[in-house]
Amino acid sequence: MKKLLFLLCASKLSFAQQSVFSQPQKDQLNSFNSPSLNDTTQKGIFIADDFELASAVKIEKVKVFAKTDAGFLDAGNLISWNILIFQDQSGKPSGIPGKNETGVVYKFNKLASQGGVTVTQAGNDATNISVEFDTTDNSFVFQPNTKYWISIYPTVKSEDNFFSEKFFYWAASTTTTPKLEQAKMVDPDDIMMNSYTTWTDLKGPSMGITGVAFELYGKDALSANDVTKSAIKVYPNPTSKTLSINAKNVKSTEVYSMDGKLVLTSTRSEVNVETLAKGTYTLVV
Image (cartoon, rainbow, N blue to C red):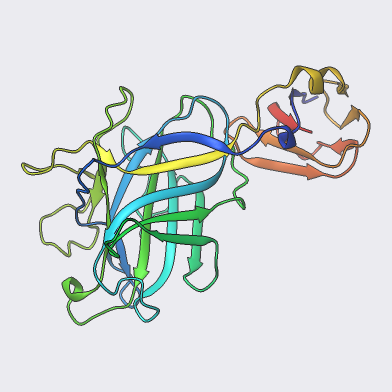
């Protein structure tokens, strides 16, 4: 008979949103050709940078720093905003935006008119901006000491000439965190005709950079609170059928696989786990 082991964690409501990763921009705003997707041909140039977290976290806000062409934010130009977060594959993203989304653990796609995105002008220059994305719809738990890759790009109105379109340019960073990789770029349709059709290090003779500027905020959803844990008992554990939770006022429970995927939810003090494969899971009460 299969057995499933559950690791009990504290209530996710006990933890406030906080900065979990920060890669600051250079003192002098240095930006470069950045990801943009054409709304008609679905062709674009994309940038991705990696990050690692110190603990298991649900990312609830992403902030990025950028420079834009004049008119980029006009309603007739900016169509939508996109974020893809990929798993790592040998020091590179596991897929390519718009082409191969293998290994995507989180996807954000919203029309500019839908909300969930806040654009703030930086200083007196209207083309220098920061963009905040509300990602509270994310249910994925990012695991500690695990490499992920983030790609942020807008969809813009198509022009007859790709290089006549109004673009978004991700700000450069010089962060040198030891475990991080060089930021990457990819031009899957070879728009620039330089054969960067697979992920390539984003650097050149005039680019003294190691990455791009962004910040991540979230809740340490899987940290253990000793008081909360001592008041909650789960049994039988391991089990193959039903897991019971002995605690007052249970509002919700979430079961996660060890790769961070949400596999079951319940609003009861008993959770039927018969459909789950044999293994170890995390229970958030």
